[in-house]
Amino acid sequence: MFFVMLVSCTSQQSEVFQLQFEHDLIPEGIAVDGNTDRVYLNSLKREKIVFSKVNGQNPATFIDTREHGYLSGFGMTIKDDTLYALGNSLTKKRNSSVLLLLQLSTGHLIDSYSLNDGGFHYLNDLATSPKNNIFMTDSESNRIYQIQRPFKNIELFMDSEEVSNSNGIAISDDGDHLYLASTKGIRIVAMDSKEIVNRPNEKYTGIDGLKFYGNNLYGIVNMFSNENGRNGLYKYTLNTAGTKIVNTEKPVTFEKDDIIPTTFAIANGAFYFVANTQLDNFDEDKKAIVDPKRLQPYRLRKVPVE
Image 1 (tube, one colour):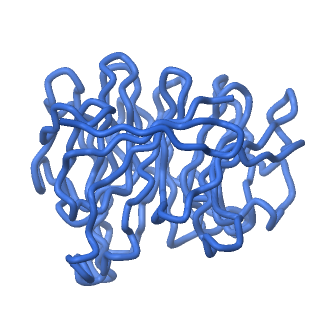
Image 2 (cartoon, rainbow, N blue to C red):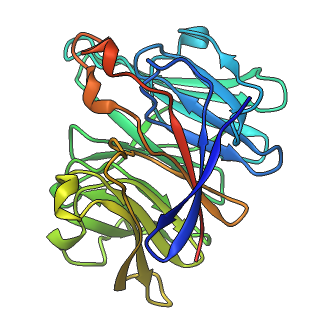
């Protein structure tokens, strides 16, 4: 049994599906496979990955708790038949991060990478380049990391205060530019030279998930009080060269009952995000639910791309 309703979402109409997973997942990362119409969610609390049809049917576990060394789930993305899934231990001391590459069709582990050098890292989100290199943000530093496959090392790509505490990350389709949602706004980096080609702009802050699609950037803003109307899914129009933001729109305004949407996926001409991650009901230090009575079923919102 599944539930769907249509709701008004500014100028667009969205579908909302009730997902049939455990209510205490606290999902941060989401990925959608457009070929199978499946949505994949990870879990901060349960350290696992689940999946179902986007309409909520056929819920199942993709990898179980701590399987393949997985940790509390963060950024995820899908490319071809591979799910890329970041995890982090959340601990301030002896912190570790892991990236799993999992085959969608079988669930088998393709590869794994770890960052456990004794320092505190907070690998948060990731993007893949046309050359199949992987780039990851560290939200507790000024660092961006990369993996140049087929090599196994997680390497430092750049370390600059100009991209401080980056969260969301995206790459242009041609692989020429890297886009970072930092505390100094969306920063645009030329891949070859690692030069930051645009100026800081606090207008573009508070962004969690970030995607490049159709020569535009899209980002979820969730860092402000929902009452002031700033939170939502934004469209940042780029110039032809992809080096400058020339216009900003907000095609999706979050509803009052949307509880901290975080990252999102784009598949088959639509945005997908969990409207109520309930992140405000999770104690990250203790890895515990604050108030179990407040937990509710997760709602997946699907909005057509303009």
